Image 1 (cartoon, rainbow, N blue to C red):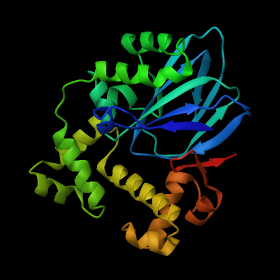
Image 2 (tube, rainbow, N blue to C red):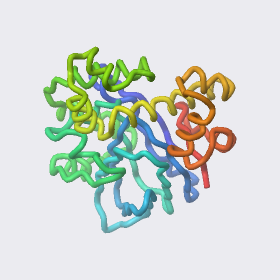
Image 3 (cartoon, one colour):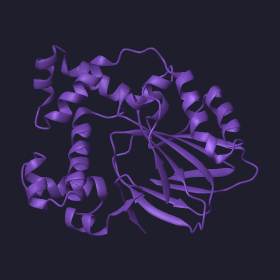
Length: 268
């Protein structure tokens, strides 16, 4: 479904986890569910129409639409994606704070919704050029563009906060405040500004993503529940139901892996 490649630039590796390119060869309509992630994405599409309604994204060919630049940001429920046609698509998958470094605005303004069009002339003009180049040159061109858009920002405080939460999923905001000499209100504001979600939502998604990684390594559901600081099986089931609309057993029975990286989707 996707070709996956890592950034070659050592600078970009700090902010971007990978690029994904939709495969057009032997294309058949794609219909799948994607699940919440603390990362975000910018998607370039050529000659395509993108529509969104009630957590469903539909992508189809449209020769009259030269370019689209779309941000995938805050979503706490499964996204249903349907590709009716093969289109040119390149996706940039950012680290949790990574997107903030490429725009003057912050995450909340660029990707504060599950999906929104990027209203930025520099990015939309670049998108018009990107797909005029041969396929084998597009990622190199994209990396050069991204390096030209890097902003000088100091996000060390929010990155310190996300590192603490990632390594200690049991910590409460009040304890995080004491540890960092910040007020709970400031912590919540920083999370909403630069990640588009609350600290508790960040922890919930991180637990979920850790569980997927552990299951890929053949851990049992009991081990996954204990190792990811779920209080009990009821807590484990409740959070999975919120994020996937199903229980852990059903989710892992249906989930599929795509590409060289372990992306977890359920095909419909």
